[in-house]
Amino acid sequence: MTNDFIIAEDENAPSFFGGAADFWAYKGPEAILTGPYETGKTFAALNKLHLLLCLFPKSRAVMLRKTYKSSVSSVIVTYEQKVLPVPPTHRKSAIKLYGGEKPEFYQYPNGSRLLVGGMDNPDKFLSAEYDFIYVNQAEELVLDDWEKLTGRATGRAGNAPWTQVMGDCNPGSPTHWIKQRERLKLFESRHEDNPRLWDREQEKWTPSGVKTIDTLNALTGVRLKRGRQGLWVAAEGQIYEYDPAIHLVPYFDIPKSWRRFRVVDFGFTNPFVCGWFAVDPDGRMYLYRQIYMSQRTVKRHATQINQLSTGEGIEATVCDHDAEDRATLAENGISTMGADKRVTVGIEKVQLRLARAGDNKPRLFILEDTLIEVDQELKSKYKPVKTDDEFSTYVWTPGKDGKPIKEEPVKVDDHGMDMIRYAVMYLDGNTKAYGSLVQGKAKGW
Image (cartoon, rainbow, N blue to C red; front, side):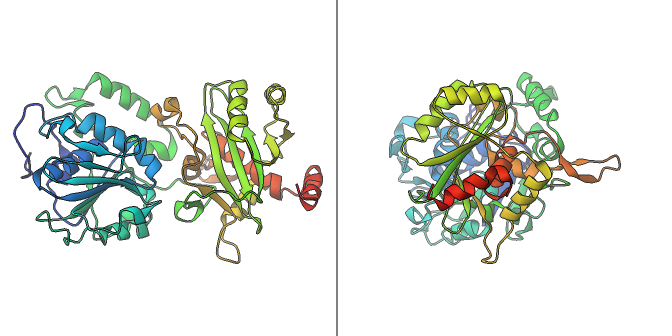
C-alpha cells in the first residue's frame, strides 16, 4: 500500500486494495467510500479512523449513523469485534469504553477519544470540534446533516495535521446529494477489493466469495444494479415519490390523545408485517412501530403484538383477508377487520398522502427506528428488512416494450407496501364498509 500513516508493519495487519486503498491515502476534507454490498467498505473506513486515532495523540473523533440506536446495533459491533482486536493497534483491553451497553465514547491510551452518536441527537456531540468524523451508511443522511458535520471538523481541534469528514455508503439514486456534492471525493470499491471474497494470488473467488456473489447475482431490478454492480441508478417505473429527507422523521412519543390503529399483512416464508399508525389532529398519519419478520407463526406474532400494544388505545386492527390467520389473531385476543385491498385506488391514495399538501408537508410519515427487530435471514439475502426499504424498488410491471404499465405493481418485496396501502385505505378509502369507522371517529373512538 502507498498510504503513509501506517503505524507499524505487522503481518497480521489488514491490507486494503483498489478504492479502499485510495480512500485510506486521501487527506482531503471530505471523503466517502462507496460501492456495492459486501465490498468491505465499513471495515476499511473504521480501520482508517482507528489508526488515525492511534497515530495522532489526543485527537478527537466521532463515529455515527443517522440514529444512535442504529449505530449501537451495527457499526459499533463491527468496530469492537473486527477492528479493535486486529493489529497494528493498541491492545483492545487498553481502550476503555464509557457507557456500557449504550457506548458514549472510547478512550485510547494515547489520549485520543472516539465519541459515538447519531444525527437524531446532534446536540449531544456537535457542540465540540473534531479532528475526524466518520459516518456509517452516509446515504441515510440528508445534505443538511452532512454540512453540520463538516462545520465541526475545520482544524480548530488542532490535534492532527489534517482533518476529514469521512464515510461509507451504498449506491442510491443518481440525484442523491452524495453524487452531486463537488467538494466530496468518492472512492469506488469492488468485490475484488475484498480479500474475504477474492483471492488475489489465485485470481479467483474464495469459498465465501462464491457464496456471496451467487446471492448477489440472484437480486433483481435496481437492487441488482446497486448491490452487485455498484451503480447509482433510480428504479425505472418507481411508483411512490418517497424521500427520506421529507417522509422519515425523528422518533417522538405519540400523544395519548391521537388515534391509533394497526395494520397487518400476513406472511411466513415472506415477511409478516404489522404496522402501528397514529393520526394527529390535522389528519397526518405516522408509522411509529413495525414488525417485519419471516419464519414465525401468527400465534407468536400475536403475543408480541399484544405485548407491544399494552396501554395503547388501538381503535382497529386492519388485516389481509386470510381467514385462518385472522382466526389465530382472534384466538389470541386481537379482533380484526378485512382490509380494503383495491390496488389502483389504494396506490393513488398513498401517492396523495406522500405528496406535499397546502402547508408544504406530506400527510404520511415514518418515524426513525420503528423496527422492533431485524430479520437476519432477510438481511443475509440482501432483502428489505423494514417497510421503508421497499419504497425505492416498488415499481410498475414493465410491458413488452420495457416501459412501465401503470396498472399493476411488481409483486416482489412489496409486503410493507401492501401494509401501507391498507393503512391509507382505512383512513381515506371512502367505501361504505368504512362508513361506520368514520362515524366512530366522530363519537370519540
